[in-house]
Amino acid sequence: MKALTLSHPTLTREILLRKADETPGAWIGIRIAGLLLILSGWKSTQVAELFGLTRWAVVKWIQKANSSGVEMVTDRDRSGRPPRLDEDVLNKLDEALSKSPQEFGIPRAKWDGVVFVEYLKKAYHVEIHVRHAQRLIKKLGYSLRRPMYRFVQAKEEGVDEFREVLKKTPVGSEKQE
Image (cartoon, rainbow, N blue to C red; front, top):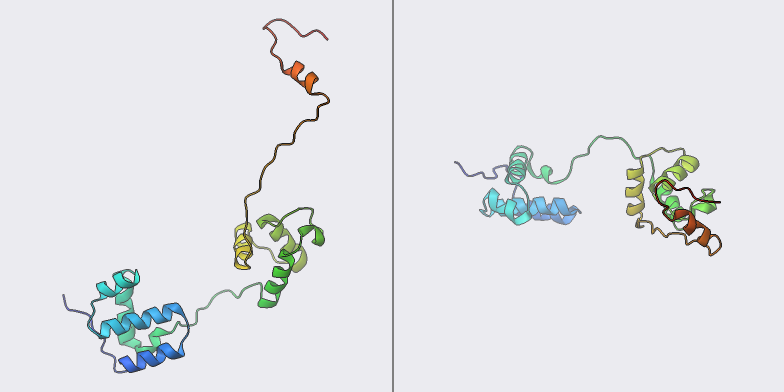
């Protein structure tokens, strides 16, 4: 099998290092480092093992680099649905999460996914799923803790009567009242 090499004329060590200085982002840096290692003679499997990637991912990097040059290092713009909540709304949500849901007319003591969905629907007319609401809460720096269940203790009055009712009676006999 023939070894894969980089052959595009715009792919030199100096250009890649300059691109690393200009471009922020961890994945971009990893791609640049991977291409630099390929240029210095490393095999695609070695680069893949080094960065914890599949060999096929590194091969795709090499193929894209050979076809489009150094521009493959930066992420291309991707189409997709624009977010429903912009930065301003996220800041307002962050402020709301620091308060009690009761201050917004929601009869609950703590925020959770369901309460957050209800608040978004009421305040911003945005409907999202509960799991997405939980991710938003986490993204805003809050944590969701499991609720603690406490059993309500019985009062002393009526305990004796309750125990009498619960006592087993022999089969066939009926309780006298």
